[in-house]
Length: 397
Image 1 (cartoon, rainbow, N blue to C red):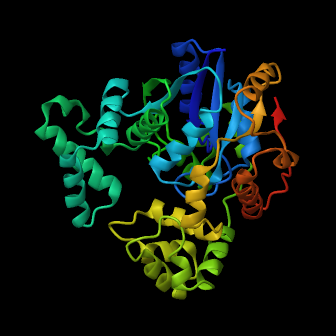
Image 2 (spheres, one colour):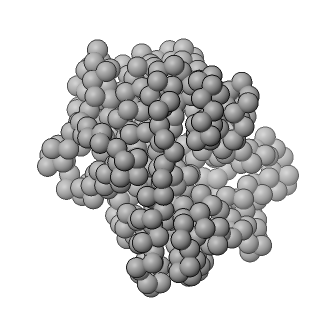
Image 3 (cartoon, rainbow, N blue to C red):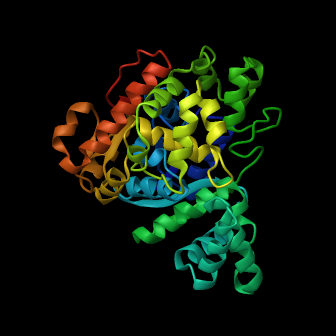
């Protein structure tokens, strides 16, 4: 079995995503496409616009062979840990030959060279990063500036200059770093992204981003949405209503009823941001108001939104450290009904496979926190979307 893996959110699946999946199969000669997909919440700290089982079903109907969930704790993490979690899930599968992803540069060599530099992290690079952090830059910006400066001082790394200035390149480099650290032999397939970047809100281009599609959907620009996504996706999302303030209300309630000392224990809290969040929560009446009051140059909006989710879901620093020590597990969301052979192959390499909630009793006990978190996240999304989609088991499509 020759497998190519794709790490995705499909929030929602766009025409660009579909083209990528088709090219991934074609270019790598894969007979199996494995999608590791974020579940109920996504990497920018937002709730997904559709239930994960629906998005997984669409992915299989559009060409994937199997869709598994990227555990929530990693799906709402910064890029490096997002990548770590995804590669950890992929490592549970046998015969994964390629990882395929889109990038702004479309150059696997440049991305790999950047990953090698970051993994080695020579002292000169460390110093440059620390100097940029002292200026108040966020870590991603500090590292990007440092890598460019290092490339200017070391001609053998000239090709990495500018790589970390683009978000999909950053994720691609993070994937390669995670593969290297895990000691895996997975090869890289990347295609140059067309159209807007993942956070580009312009829908009036040939291949708009999922961000642009979501914005157009909220604005009820249905023809724009129709042109940007496969017809099957449009059939699902055309009746979606914009999410109400339920998520913000839940986060604000939690922040207003927790003291600063407790807040400091949550994952990714540092640099006094817990004080800013607590002060902002005292007077804020909406989540956007709180985020605007709390943000700084060092703490991006996406990072603050993720921190709010850590607080909502009680993801402490200690819980995160324990999660990293857990063995891989695979929660299957959807499977091509003609490809049950994938399950047979998977069972030979991974003991911790879930196809329904009742499987929790059969997996390693250390995983129960992570699995419970996934189901808590789904229940929270049901509240946000006023949904009654109660499927809790793998879909055969």
